[in-house]
Image (cartoon, rainbow, N blue to C red; front, top):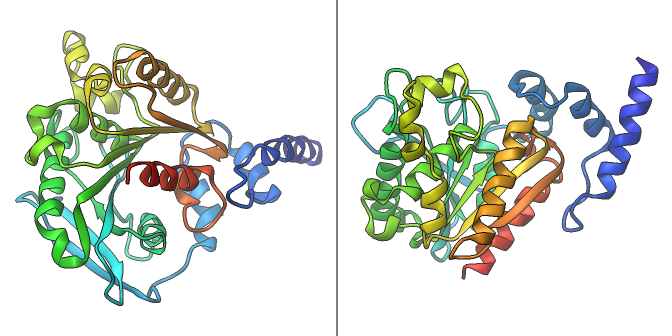
Length: 314
């Protein structure tokens, strides 16, 4: 175990040297623990590392609206985070959680810091934050996710002005399955309820964009179906190349290989497409879960890149 820890710490030190200059690098101790967990999706072990670093409720200087309805389904719920004191109209960051299409929530339990942490970071960095959930497979298969995001965007466009947000500057961010839903929404204009999609930009973190690039797992089949002849039309790749909505894509250095492959596939495709390269970030040191669990607690290139992406779109 000592030899393993020494080896992992050495690799972590190398990775730390590659971290963004805009934020302090993750501690060596956290880095080797993530390396020890490995290139797997392990929410429980990863949460145990980062939950103690996150702030607890009540959140100072923050106003939080919980369980706001945006549609008729039981899971059509969102939370809105705004600064306690009034300010000029802010851009809006909508966050869409993951969960392999069959699970997950905007908050896993009433004491969890995830994904309030994304909202706190958003407000601290000049946004109004909206944290939304959606219907799950197999009860609600494709295209339920994209339909639900369309309803979220429509609610934000119509209601966020009275909460200090700017409906002309809505950014939609998704992680894992949430990134897939964001990509499907952006790439399929038939789902839009707001003119031109209603977005100033879309951020997709560790998503899947071409369903034919590798075999689908059971959770993905539960959502997209077992008929592979439909996978091309249900993929987002071609629509993402055609959209005028500015795109940012990201993946984690310790992501399972499939997510890295999909990141590279979309990155290369956009650079050959008609609208030019999407902003792309490979997040050093982090894993599939830590890239979002670390937000508002530990250094990550991801948040730097999001701020630069938004700044470029002003």
